[in-house]
Image 1: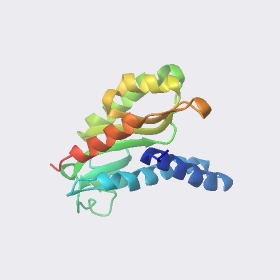
Image 2: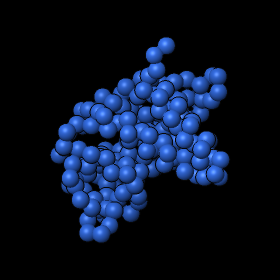
Image 3: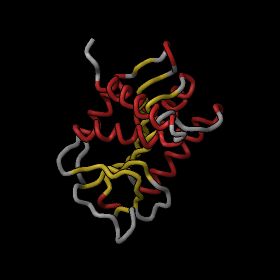
Image 4: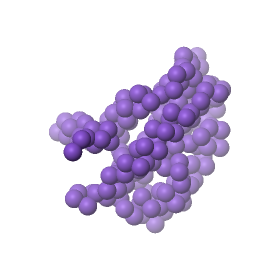
Amino acid sequence: MKKNELDEIQEEYSKRTSEITEKGWQGYRGMVFQEILCAHLEKYMPSGLEFVKRAWVEDHPQEIDLLLVKKGAEPIDLTPAYRSDDVIRVFEIKASGMFCKKENVEEVLREFNSRITEGTGKEFTYITRRESRRNSISTKNALGNDAYIFFIGNGENRITNYDDWTRLIISIKKTKAL
């Protein structure tokens, strides 16, 4: 069976996270996933746009995992903040979903989405490598098509969600600079 790009991402993630786990750096798994994901998504980037990792949008107090900005956009002065006019889209990237009480997942995600969207004035996209079955339903209920979940569940019963990977690629390709 030919490997899908999503399978390659998972294989690379597993390899790299096992290396950092041996060093006791489990807290960096999300950053590892973000790096791998960006490397794959950059292949589908429309001309005139680029990703910026771990940055801010001017006048918004929260760090954003990933910004899609106009190519050549420069941070404001000596900060990692970008002018709102240069930012096209904002992404929250998770290795294993949002951490909160199971009964609050939808509420937490809706509030988070609202805070980011209203605070930045930009389209918000939530990407997670893996979610539990229960949380994947709550995530989709809260965020709809703005949520991309690649693997649902764990172990032998894990579902690979190729449809969300394909939707994300199409979404990235369709993005236009302002």
